[in-house]
Length: 312
Image (tube, rainbow, N blue to C red; front, side, top):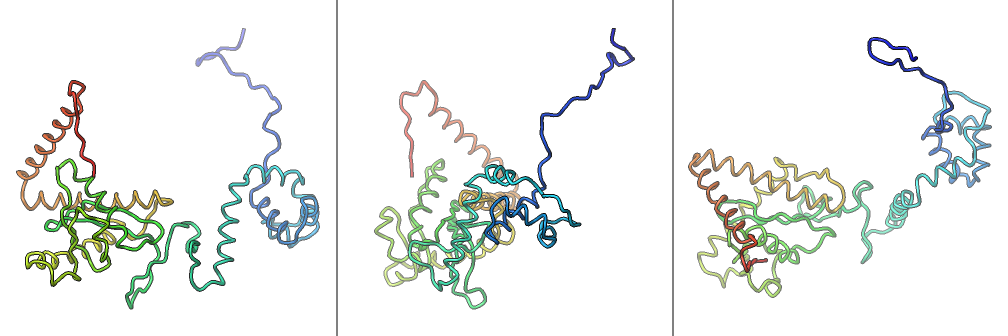
């Protein structure tokens, strides 16, 4: 009978041989061996043998004292390369090749982007045209706001440093999708001079800028002066809502980051409106939201024979 104690059957430990194999060689030694292999054009057997004979190589590998024994078996390097995989090594090698090619170029070659940040290859060099900061590294973000209340209704990041006027159609498309629950579509866009010459690409929206001062009405001139209010809005996004630095990875992370910053600005805007106009405005807003949700549920009910969707 097994020994029993107050807590039940007593566990007896029996020694056995582990199937895990030998412990792995430290990562710093493997990386240093691979670096020395490529630096001195050595084979796997040669770099292991020379490391056991050269004190400076062992110091480079991170060893505190000199040892005459081999740091590892030559086949361990083969297994380590297989463990890393070709794709894991291909990306840093491609980046290094791009840096070598672009180091002798003053301007970017057409169809070939320059690499400005190792950890963020999507970053572009954007010309600001200002004396204090002529250039800025990052991605372009288009911001769409309402003309009177400065509520953000569109925030979209654009990779590849496109011309500003060519991004207007995508910004209007996003704003139309976000405002479709309110049955509202953009009818007029008040922009700066960077959006000249894109009227044909946006036939359903009236585009107003300073280049049309002689052809627009006095009311449009007053509204055009109101367009400058978006500049401090962009400053608040950078200073107060983390738009100045993105912590998310790749182009998808940049697009998500722009939307999150705009959502944070809108939440603070909503809190300011509640503090300014009282709880009555909040209750009216919630009732309107509940009414729209009920209408949407009624439209999507199975008993409804037909559902009409408005897409921007």
